[in-house]
Image 1 (cartoon, rainbow, N blue to C red):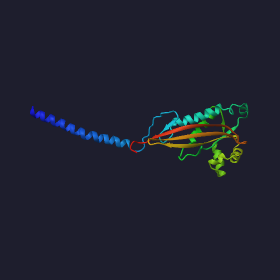
Image 2 (cartoon, helix red, strand yellow):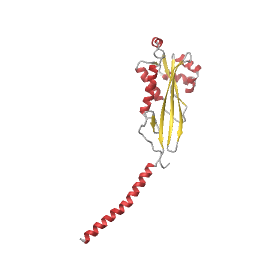
Image 3 (cartoon, rainbow, N blue to C red):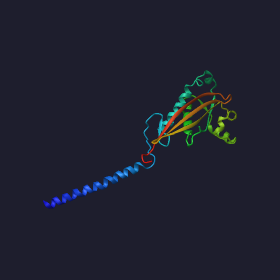
Image 4 (cartoon, one colour):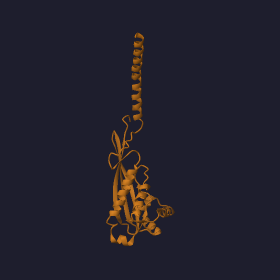
Length: 214
Protein backbone atom coordinates (compact mmCIF):
# COMPACT_ATOMS: atom_id res chain seq x y z
CA UNK A 1 0.00 0.00 0.00
CA UNK A 2 2.84 2.36 0.84
CA UNK A 3 4.43 1.80 -2.59
CA UNK A 4 1.13 2.38 -4.37
CA UNK A 5 0.52 5.55 -2.36
CA UNK A 6 3.97 6.85 -3.30
CA UNK A 7 3.37 6.13 -7.00
CA UNK A 8 -0.05 7.82 -6.97
CA UNK A 9 1.30 10.76 -5.02
CA UNK A 10 4.17 11.18 -7.49
CA UNK A 11 1.81 11.06 -10.44
CA UNK A 12 -0.49 13.69 -8.92
CA UNK A 13 2.51 15.91 -8.22
CA UNK A 14 3.70 15.62 -11.83
CA UNK A 15 0.24 16.49 -13.15
CA UNK A 16 0.12 19.50 -10.85
CA UNK A 17 3.53 20.69 -12.06
CA UNK A 18 2.56 20.18 -15.70
CA UNK A 19 -0.60 22.23 -15.21
CA UNK A 20 1.42 25.07 -13.69
CA UNK A 21 3.79 25.03 -16.67
CA UNK A 22 1.42 24.27 -19.56
CA UNK A 23 -1.44 26.63 -18.70
CA UNK A 24 0.68 29.80 -18.60
CA UNK A 25 2.37 28.79 -21.87
CA UNK A 26 -0.99 28.19 -23.57
CA UNK A 27 -2.32 31.52 -22.28
CA UNK A 28 0.79 33.32 -23.57
CA UNK A 29 0.44 31.74 -27.04
CA UNK A 30 -3.23 32.71 -27.24
CA UNK A 31 -2.46 36.32 -26.30
CA UNK A 32 0.38 36.50 -28.83
CA UNK A 33 -1.84 35.19 -31.62
CA UNK A 34 -4.52 37.73 -30.76
CA UNK A 35 -2.01 40.54 -30.91
CA UNK A 36 -0.60 39.80 -34.37
CA UNK A 37 -1.71 42.60 -36.70
CA UNK A 38 -5.08 44.35 -36.87
CA UNK A 39 -7.93 42.21 -35.65
CA UNK A 40 -10.43 42.13 -38.50
CA UNK A 41 -14.04 41.51 -37.55
CA UNK A 42 -15.58 39.71 -40.50
CA UNK A 43 -19.20 39.73 -39.40
CA UNK A 44 -21.37 42.49 -40.83
CA UNK A 45 -22.79 44.39 -37.86
CA UNK A 46 -24.77 46.86 -39.97
CA UNK A 47 -26.20 46.75 -43.47
CA UNK A 48 -24.14 49.78 -44.46
CA UNK A 49 -20.87 48.58 -42.88
CA UNK A 50 -18.18 46.59 -44.63
CA UNK A 51 -15.76 45.01 -42.18
CA UNK A 52 -12.14 44.37 -43.07
CA UNK A 53 -9.66 45.63 -45.61
CA UNK A 54 -11.78 44.85 -48.69
CA UNK A 55 -15.34 45.38 -49.76
CA UNK A 56 -17.59 42.38 -49.36
CA UNK A 57 -19.40 40.85 -52.32
CA UNK A 58 -22.66 41.69 -50.58
CA UNK A 59 -21.90 45.39 -50.47
CA UNK A 60 -20.76 45.51 -54.09
CA UNK A 61 -24.11 43.97 -54.97
CA UNK A 62 -26.03 46.31 -52.65
CA UNK A 63 -24.45 49.44 -54.14
CA UNK A 64 -24.95 48.35 -57.75
CA UNK A 65 -28.53 47.18 -57.11
CA UNK A 66 -29.37 50.44 -55.33
CA UNK A 67 -28.08 52.51 -58.25
CA UNK A 68 -29.77 50.34 -60.89
CA UNK A 69 -33.10 50.57 -59.04
CA UNK A 70 -32.71 54.33 -58.66
CA UNK A 71 -32.13 54.76 -62.40
CA UNK A 72 -35.05 52.51 -63.27
CA UNK A 73 -37.42 54.49 -61.03
CA UNK A 74 -36.10 57.92 -62.02
CA UNK A 75 -38.34 60.58 -63.54
CA UNK A 76 -36.06 60.83 -66.58
CA UNK A 77 -36.22 57.10 -67.30
CA UNK A 78 -40.01 57.12 -67.08
CA UNK A 79 -40.59 60.00 -69.48
CA UNK A 80 -42.60 58.95 -72.57
CA UNK A 81 -39.91 60.63 -74.67
CA UNK A 82 -37.29 58.23 -73.32
CA UNK A 83 -39.29 55.20 -74.42
CA UNK A 84 -39.76 56.64 -77.90
CA UNK A 85 -36.18 57.77 -78.49
CA UNK A 86 -34.43 54.84 -76.77
CA UNK A 87 -31.16 56.77 -76.35
CA UNK A 88 -27.90 54.84 -76.38
CA UNK A 89 -25.67 54.90 -73.33
CA UNK A 90 -21.94 54.63 -72.83
CA UNK A 91 -20.33 53.58 -69.59
CA UNK A 92 -17.39 55.34 -68.02
CA UNK A 93 -14.62 52.79 -67.65
CA UNK A 94 -14.45 53.22 -63.88
CA UNK A 95 -15.62 55.52 -61.15
CA UNK A 96 -13.35 58.51 -60.67
CA UNK A 97 -11.36 57.54 -57.58
CA UNK A 98 -10.82 60.40 -55.15
CA UNK A 99 -9.83 58.16 -52.25
CA UNK A 100 -6.29 57.43 -51.12
CA UNK A 101 -6.76 53.71 -51.79
CA UNK A 102 -6.98 51.41 -54.78
CA UNK A 103 -10.64 50.48 -55.19
CA UNK A 104 -11.86 48.20 -57.97
CA UNK A 105 -14.82 50.31 -59.05
CA UNK A 106 -15.13 48.57 -62.41
CA UNK A 107 -17.13 45.78 -60.78
CA UNK A 108 -19.79 48.23 -59.60
CA UNK A 109 -20.16 49.80 -63.05
CA UNK A 110 -20.39 46.42 -64.79
CA UNK A 111 -23.01 45.15 -62.35
CA UNK A 112 -25.14 48.24 -62.93
CA UNK A 113 -24.83 47.92 -66.70
CA UNK A 114 -25.73 44.22 -66.61
CA UNK A 115 -28.93 44.87 -64.66
CA UNK A 116 -29.97 47.81 -66.84
CA UNK A 117 -29.47 45.81 -70.03
CA UNK A 118 -31.14 42.63 -68.79
CA UNK A 119 -34.17 44.52 -67.50
CA UNK A 120 -34.54 46.54 -70.69
CA UNK A 121 -33.85 49.83 -68.94
CA UNK A 122 -30.98 50.98 -71.15
CA UNK A 123 -29.19 50.25 -74.42
CA UNK A 124 -25.42 50.37 -74.02
CA UNK A 125 -22.67 50.79 -76.58
CA UNK A 126 -19.67 48.54 -75.97
CA UNK A 127 -17.46 50.54 -73.62
CA UNK A 128 -14.39 49.09 -75.32
CA UNK A 129 -15.16 51.51 -78.16
CA UNK A 130 -15.22 54.33 -75.64
CA UNK A 131 -11.91 53.22 -74.17
CA UNK A 132 -10.28 53.06 -77.61
CA UNK A 133 -11.43 56.60 -78.35
CA UNK A 134 -10.18 57.86 -75.00
CA UNK A 135 -6.82 56.26 -75.70
CA UNK A 136 -6.67 57.85 -79.14
CA UNK A 137 -7.50 61.22 -77.63
CA UNK A 138 -4.94 60.54 -74.87
CA UNK A 139 -7.48 61.29 -72.19
CA UNK A 140 -7.67 59.88 -68.70
CA UNK A 141 -10.80 59.03 -66.73
CA UNK A 142 -10.98 62.61 -65.41
CA UNK A 143 -11.62 63.73 -69.00
CA UNK A 144 -15.10 62.27 -68.78
CA UNK A 145 -15.98 65.05 -66.34
CA UNK A 146 -15.19 67.74 -68.90
CA UNK A 147 -18.24 68.55 -71.03
CA UNK A 148 -16.30 69.22 -74.24
CA UNK A 149 -14.63 65.84 -73.93
CA UNK A 150 -17.95 64.08 -73.29
CA UNK A 151 -19.45 65.68 -76.41
CA UNK A 152 -16.50 64.54 -78.51
CA UNK A 153 -16.71 60.98 -77.23
CA UNK A 154 -20.49 60.88 -77.67
CA UNK A 155 -20.31 62.04 -81.27
CA UNK A 156 -17.64 59.51 -82.12
CA UNK A 157 -19.48 56.50 -80.70
CA UNK A 158 -23.04 57.66 -81.42
CA UNK A 159 -24.20 57.79 -77.81
CA UNK A 160 -26.64 60.23 -76.23
CA UNK A 161 -26.04 59.48 -72.54
CA UNK A 162 -22.99 58.70 -70.42
CA UNK A 163 -23.11 57.00 -67.02
CA UNK A 164 -20.20 58.18 -64.92
CA UNK A 165 -19.42 58.67 -61.26
CA UNK A 166 -16.91 59.10 -58.52
CA UNK A 167 -16.00 57.64 -55.17
CA UNK A 168 -14.66 59.65 -52.24
CA UNK A 169 -13.86 58.75 -48.65
CA UNK A 170 -13.47 60.18 -45.17
CA UNK A 171 -11.49 58.32 -42.51
CA UNK A 172 -12.30 58.65 -38.81
CA UNK A 173 -9.88 57.17 -36.31
CA UNK A 174 -10.18 56.38 -32.63
CA UNK A 175 -8.08 54.42 -30.13
CA UNK A 176 -9.86 51.16 -30.83
CA UNK A 177 -11.04 51.36 -34.46
CA UNK A 178 -10.76 52.99 -37.87
CA UNK A 179 -13.93 53.78 -39.82
CA UNK A 180 -13.82 54.76 -43.50
CA UNK A 181 -16.93 56.35 -44.98
CA UNK A 182 -17.10 55.80 -48.74
CA UNK A 183 -19.47 57.96 -50.76
CA UNK A 184 -20.35 56.66 -54.23
CA UNK A 185 -22.00 59.20 -56.53
CA UNK A 186 -23.27 58.40 -60.02
CA UNK A 187 -24.51 60.75 -62.73
CA UNK A 188 -26.34 60.17 -65.99
CA UNK A 189 -25.43 63.02 -68.34
CA UNK A 190 -27.01 64.13 -71.59
CA UNK A 191 -23.98 64.28 -73.86
CA UNK A 192 -25.37 66.97 -76.16
CA UNK A 193 -26.56 69.44 -73.53
CA UNK A 194 -24.38 68.50 -70.55
CA UNK A 195 -27.50 68.24 -68.39
CA UNK A 196 -27.33 65.82 -65.48
CA UNK A 197 -30.61 63.98 -66.01
CA UNK A 198 -30.21 61.67 -63.03
CA UNK A 199 -27.90 61.43 -60.03
CA UNK A 200 -27.83 59.53 -56.77
CA UNK A 201 -25.40 58.58 -54.03
CA UNK A 202 -24.80 55.69 -51.68
CA UNK A 203 -22.65 55.53 -48.55
CA UNK A 204 -20.69 52.50 -47.41
CA UNK A 205 -18.83 52.25 -44.13
CA UNK A 206 -15.79 50.06 -43.61
CA UNK A 207 -14.77 49.20 -40.06
CA UNK A 208 -11.37 47.89 -38.94
CA UNK A 209 -10.91 47.09 -35.27
CA UNK A 210 -7.42 47.42 -33.82
CA UNK A 211 -5.72 44.73 -31.78
CA UNK A 212 -5.62 45.19 -28.00
CA UNK A 213 -1.81 45.09 -28.12
CA UNK A 214 -1.32 47.67 -30.88
